[in-house]
Image (tube, rainbow, N blue to C red):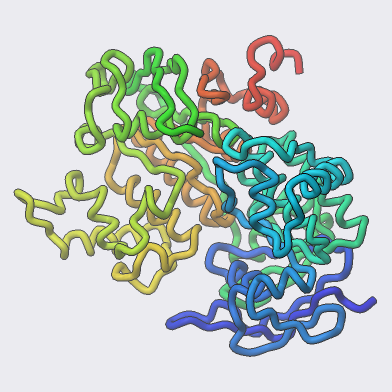
Length: 504
């Protein structure tokens, strides 16, 4: 059978780094092909060349045996290549149909388009009303918008980048059913994910990249997740461990925290109550958009809380802003890496200064100590193995996973008494994810209290002492992670609590 897509010795270099070095692979019609590699391995550059966002320096591509060299995404789409990006590109205030129309070259009138959306939704098991406002949709429903937009253009190859990072287990099942139907109809799928058990369940073949080169191929269903991870990083992986910890005094307490939504499409917090002790790791799960960002900003001090709702070591810190809370020892790392956790155009040294100035002694009476800030940035880079030419590089120049390591490392190395992190390993490879989780466990072992907000249920089960679920701005009562099943947690994330969960 002639391959649908073949890549022959594709090479792309940037100043100081070869992103792809003579990469070759073939994808057959209807094949679900995984592209694996740690952060910075070259996956994103490769799919950008396939989708017409980047032009290769050397090498050739063929589609159906004919030369293929898209100058832009429009040309890739015309050739039958669709892509669903990790970060959705949707307008909250517009309807599903209006958003889909914006992504089409020659969109039909909305009435006809709405009928096409319904047909595709029914055919591939993606229930979605074309008249619904995107701002009211869950993360899983937003992903359906992106997929349907691709399917309406009849793709022969669908590229998916970390498609399950914001989905519940139940939504993942629906997505996989859809992808299997597409595969059965002859659509090839190039699938990028760090969730290796998903790769084993879904994919027919896998190509592994390391430092821009193909280092191996495998059949995922016949290869263990650990073996695939070790192919990616080229070394034996350790498992995060934690010695027995005796919990200390209560260090953080929320009493009926309720706050209005900061935006039209945000989620108000409703009567959130819990306490956190020294040495404890509290895992908070929830489908994206159920109050995770709002909870983090309420804890960081970016949004102030009424008196009596947030207490740190017995002191009411509701009216205190971020700097005052950081000085006390309450530090946070938000989900959005670029723009919230880090300033994109600032250097890593400058980004180290942004949150570390007070606790690391990087300023004196208003004067900034740049040599000390550079030293702090270099320490983060070294300790957390951040792949970058140096601390003078801009934050936006790092891959997502390497910037995540920098952001988490910056907060961990400031020795917090309470650390709140949202999606600490989102888009991070297996080796880096293990290192970040170990750093959080080491922090707790040293007596700090840690809150991990994550959609990765395996992560929460691996490192948390207690688990709670956010749903529509409400937090379930935290319970021990011992004995909890993934199915129970998935239902809690969907809003089921108490007896409904207990009898799953």
